[in-house]
Image 1 (cartoon, rainbow, N blue to C red):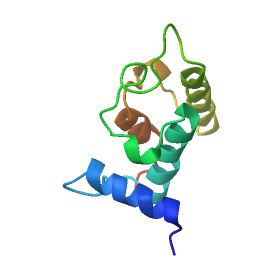
Image 2: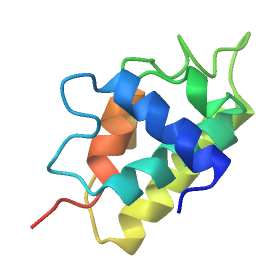
Image 3: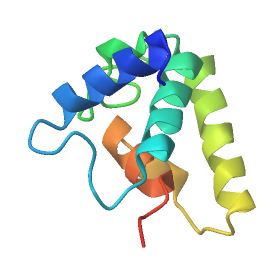
Image 4: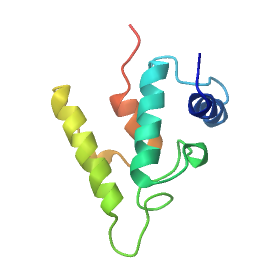
Length: 107
């Protein structure tokens, strides 16, 4: 059974991906975890995130730099290292890029 936060995330994912609540090639739980990681790290309500949100522009935008964006970049680098992935962290420009880069693909 889903808790209240998981239900809210599921609703947001349905809104974010209207034709298909979550891209079928990615595991739903991974998408939820990554979505929450972005929201928690950038201190943005998960229900306010959109796949098209651009890091440093739409979310995580501050005067010069964002400590939260640095933390998210570090999390992404660690995740890539743990999975032995070669990823250009700077190429992860949107929420969608981040989720698609790290969500496990269904077999």
